[in-house]
Length: 320
Image 1: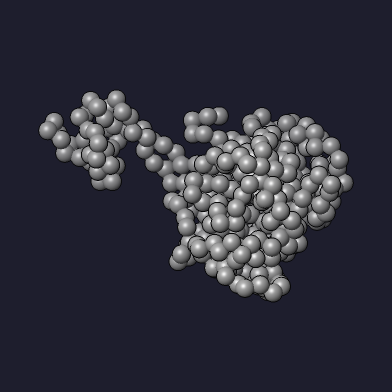
Image 2: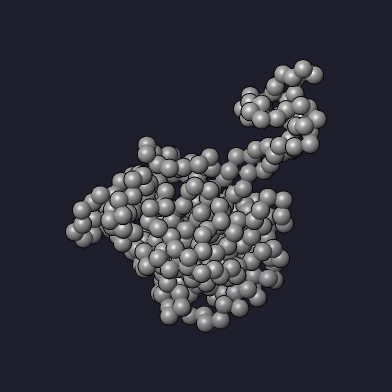
């Protein structure tokens, strides 16, 4: 686990667990809430009740938010939207903040965004999802080069999981660049155009660089095992996934539309996940070590049994 003080500045890519309970919060676990820092983007996933206050504890400003992504409209994943939206308004956040959610939940999202009296200075774009695929950008949204996708999960009401993918790139080799006589602005031209004429001939970008695989992140909340769980998790660097139950209660998990720690860890192991975060724990369990013990029977990579305010970095390229 990665604990840091509230005034810690986030690294360029990391997850902050704002809340890790499931349906019922406990003395030590807030309702759900997860902030993903990805370069200049900050995506707030599933803001459950109390998220605004948890953001304060974590040192996350509403002005940093670039998107809110909701998996489904159960209260432990969405009741905090009202407070977060009003804080966005109060703080005068200038950018448009898209709010992504299952289309069938629009009436609840609209009610949460207008649940009490305030001045409505916020700039929101409500995006209801009705099918799998790339989540479109909206005018005025702050974003980077990574692509956000959604896939339909199998829960007791319409639910979507999310996956963020950075495109593959190239890592420039200073030694080979120097040998080719390329420096300064010519490096940028080479990257942009793919090739550069020099006094010694044409140099292709592949001649002076190595492939740099893009990083990836997946967020899988309330669901039974289904194809979307596997497609979202496939090969990601960091997987955040619900493990509401222990496997001795697998029947309860299936009946209520959830996963067990063993199921979640099996997905991670078989999908080649580098770093696994288990979360969304039922209040019936008091010992987090049980989740770690169960997951470790099948998964030997980086593992975090999340606690509130934990910070988990996206693994660096080339590690693992």
